[in-house]
Image (cartoon, rainbow, N blue to C red; front, top):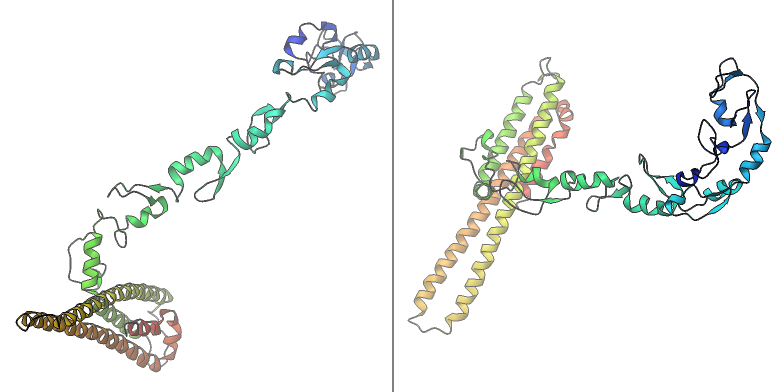
Length: 387
């Protein structure tokens, strides 16, 4: 190591004979050369040549021997100096021999920040505060998503990246949408942004409605056409089944050469996608069924009110109420009839698809094993959910 440190202000008052010509610090383990110059032992070792000799930096003379200068060492260790950190308000003063012991605990001594990649050095007395509260490289948890990152990155993360940050939609102006949900919000198939128009999801399998709709309009369209949509899906699945069956050898039950594994995989994926759409229609139809139930309850409530008022009305005022009551009963009967027909139509259609699939499976067991992932039985369960 180089010589003993000294503050820049105290260095002026020290006799230059005690300063190493190489490191310009107070001698540490001084050694003398053949030519009479004194250096720190560690400083001179840096000048050693490949042949083991030295060249004096002062007079450029060569030498190969070093002599410990104990007289200079005693003088140096007895020098009275101020703390090397006196410029940073440390008041310590003492002999050079004790300076390194003091520096090991000096509150003004600067230490390297312990956070990864931080190049900053701070006073020992301020290190903890810097590491925990000030350092841009300290690790912090995002208060919204709990992801760990440095303090410098956290600001950018919250402003631009965090998926849990609430932002405003640029299209419809809606506020409070999580950044991670914005993509779903703007999705033209299932998003709820009122400024993003979309076509009917069932257009590609036969729905004749071609106009673009906002989410509220699309929801109304799906409610009004849930049964036709379900029929379109079931017809599509049945056609797909026949198409797949046409590629199977009716004798051996094996797949034809033209029916590759990739076609099987794509067919399974298409069927899975279709079943997912059926799930969507089932959910929408359930919503419609609940709406019908609400209407049914409202009609019954009105019926009870009319009956309770019959006893209080005169014979002349009973006729309008009776007509109203009869109309409400007709509405109730018609609503129940429509609900019953809806349930029966869905059940019959789903059962028909299941029976046809079962018959095809019995004639060809190997095909059933190939398309086990298609989950034909789930189709029947979805149809019976309306019962």
